[in-house]
Amino acid sequence: MNEKNNTLTLEESMRKKNTDTADKFIPIPEYEAVCFSEFRSGEIVINSPKDSVFTDSNIVFNFSASGGETKYLKIFDNKDKMLFTFPIRERKFIQKVSLPVGLFYWKVENDLELLYLGKVSIKRKS
Image 1 (cartoon, rainbow, N blue to C red):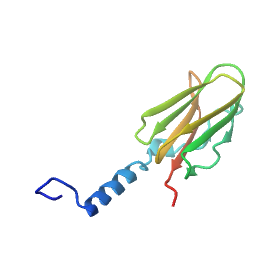
Image 2: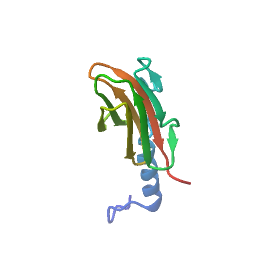
Image 3: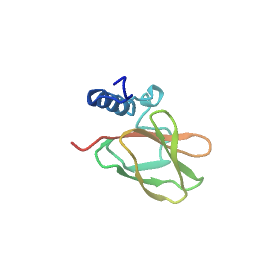
Image 4: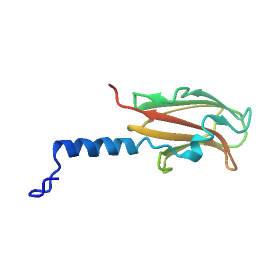
């Protein structure tokens, strides 16, 4: 850092930017152990996202759910902070979500338990 005017040099700025970006991709070990796991057979069929790495920030969540109780799509960042929650009340569910660069986990839950856990990574276009 330039002592005289408290500014970052270009090299320091780039290093900080790369570190900040890298922090957005640190996984949550507890989630990684069960990612892409279905916990109750037949409750939900995941149509998309099938992939986990995207360069487009617009992700489409598309599910077919069994009837009965309301289910929820919950999206978390890699620090386990919930960003979005959407109720799944119909048998067909489609929701488009725009996410910034980073690693995100998503869960489908009912009021009592986790039904599915997935993840998506949004990377910059090269």
